[in-house]
Image (cartoon, rainbow, N blue to C red):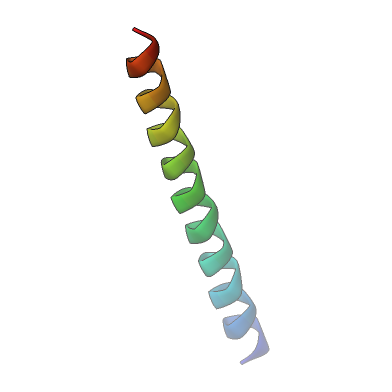
Length: 36
């Protein structure tokens, strides 16, 4: 049971990181488009 909970937490953390990475990439793309 504990392993299951730990895995769920890891998955959530990875998803949060992936979402932050996507947001950062989107902002970088917007900035590049403004500079061009």
